[in-house]
Image (cartoon, rainbow, N blue to C red):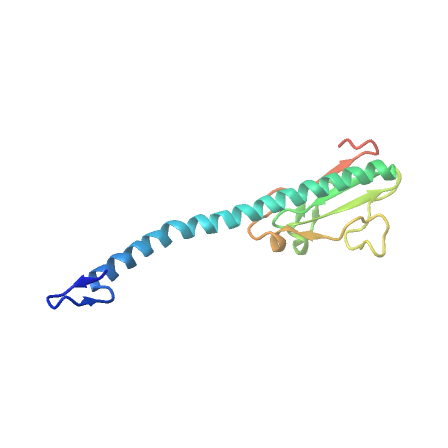
Length: 152
């Protein structure tokens, strides 16, 4: 703000009061905007995780239909447990999931250590929701099995 002095010459710059007011206004603006920005970032991560899980559910279902086999979607919870079937407990696999195939009714499901490159019954590698989507964790471990008609 320019103020004309007694000599009629305008002084350039801000007074300390104007500077203090503008600093306070900037602080208030930052205090209200930053939490909203951080919250939307977390919300975006959750949305991405839910979209990815939905896509992988559909992948498991379509694999069951196209291959004429049962397809399992195995999910470990945040402590590394899948309660049923078999009561698997592997803390290394906490918050991870993958898609598996059972080629015949009497056939066994693949071992948890098998990899898609070595076992054709393993469709995907273990996907880690905690590292891919910060703050997203599985609260309940469970298998979801689709039959060859796509129903669970």
